[in-house]
Image (cartoon, rainbow, N blue to C red; front, side, top):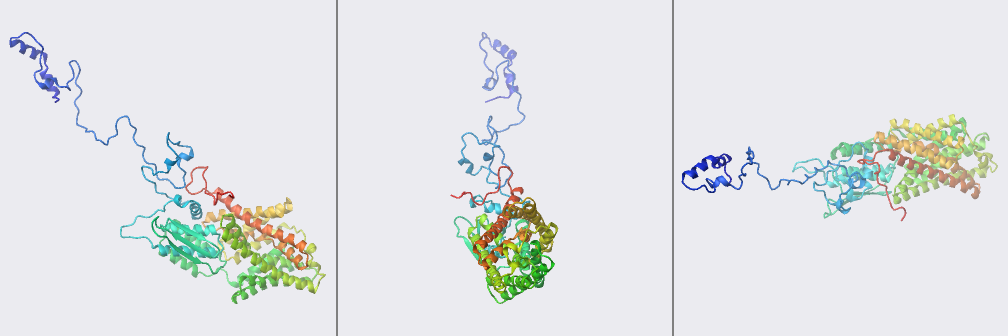
Length: 581
């Protein structure tokens, strides 16, 4: 037992101990300690100073870190699910003996909560998550609730998701964007294990609460389609409020009901006038004069009224296109028969511009390029049926006109349309054509100016490449359409809206109206060998427009920072990585 140092000093004093032993009358022998405390195992030897007395005791815990070991590194800050692991970036190499499989285990501090970047538009965030495997998708952030408070009912969330997807798909939105919107709505209300599926007429969504629970599936069929970009933009704003602002389910239903109740921004008579303006402007693109402008406008307005009448009687859309194509061709033939100085071909070509389904064509090609082949095939089949309806209507009138006057020179394909190059007139006509398309598409008024300007820029690029650089019309059309898609995507991301209002109307001046007319005229005259190349060129121009628009949109996304990605080498996932095998 250790003794008090002061007491030890007193017991080992040499002078007092020695004199005591001599007094007892013995020879001097080995000195013994005065007590047990005087020779403790913890008492330092003679000549060695005593250590300082501790001020207070510090007991050692069995959980304390032993000396010589490094303390554990603190947990990293919460990161994003889109950030690649540090072992794959090359900044922090894996320790010796570690394997790639070890990175898949749960870290000692738990999996961090994922927070998606709010600065990125919801389209990009949801599209990025859709292209990820289900097991790698981040868990949505759930607000803290009381024990008695529950989230929204799953069936109501799925119903709202399907209703929003129905409006987008019926308005002509691409399948990928429709799925992104549906996924964004479900993800915002806490349903992380959802799989939306979009086809041409069917929408479905499946939610599985956990790996052991039964999935909940709901579906909805799109039976009617209509062109109303005003409603489309309103739905995009609603989805943005749901995904970014976190509005309640009741507010979302209320907003969706208001969107459905809203009337079209332009009445039917304004649409008829816009159809006439579109055809007249298109006739000026190919060299038409004032009288040709009026003739093309009158024929297109008559066709629009007949199409409205056929629609009111419940006729399918195929027959609506047949009756809509007949009046412009009839007016062109009539003016050609009455006045030899009028370019009947320019009148008919202007009428075809208003009928070519460029919107459905672009959407179909976009779905095919993004991997939605069933929807793409259905959209392209619809485009084929509509074009056949146009062919039937125009060919019927052209055949009758050629029977009345076989020597009608103004319907001669070789003399129909010359190479017309008037930059100022054509630029103005292209912008008028895009403006008329905006009205026909029922766009919001604040988007009309951007789409009109975009159409003018597209024609300037196309005219410069064709008339100045003398490039073939097909690559020139693809380049001009690519710029349209690029500007449209950038504008849509700036306004957090759909890109269709900025793209669809702007590609109007690039539609292959003259090539389609030449092919139909040769077929009406029985010249199949001469008509087939014209139709092939028309199909090539249409595909060039669609591919160019899609490529421009993809290039625009390259300039946009992917949500949550901080490394330069990491990017958004592609739709497929099979490379054909």
